[in-house]
Image 1 (cartoon, rainbow, N blue to C red):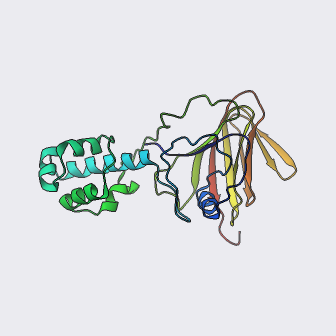
Image 2: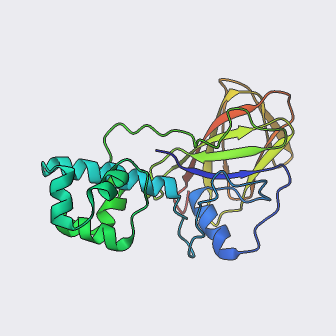
Image 3: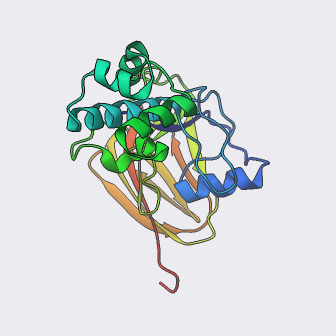
Length: 241
């Protein structure tokens, strides 16, 4: 399963669309001037809601369909007969190779006794969930590139936000201001991460972690010669703290 939020270059500028800023802030996603998105299949989101990555939807439908079909002890041929969906199409859905239409999902859901939305719920995932980087996300970023990848299943946005942060040399990545205070913990695996908090500069080295509270814009930079890899945990602080 993969789910990448954003990639941007070092020149950050706030989005001109307020609803997108609100959605990104809710998710802990960055705002900036994108060099390119990791996947062109990230759909625009309505106000206050995250976009759906096509690969994530394919993974959820694939896993949920396969699991439910086995629970019902049905072969692909038997399910095809019950649902009216071809065996070939069902096989492509289970392999994550074909995006089904709403009509197709409705036919399958009626045959299996669940709702259409059931196939898009991450809560049906197995206890162990391997989250792989996208195929088009290079191991080594080009100079000036930055990437923030969510490490949570689709729909798990109500609590803490957990990300992998990667910064190529001479790059930076920013997140918008938030209407609530956030407690941010950044743990560095490789490289040296540069974090400015007011007038104080913090250099976070491998195996070190920096924890701080902030509602203002968050900015991370890499002024070194080695690519930075860090892991970021963002927690919204309760009102009154």
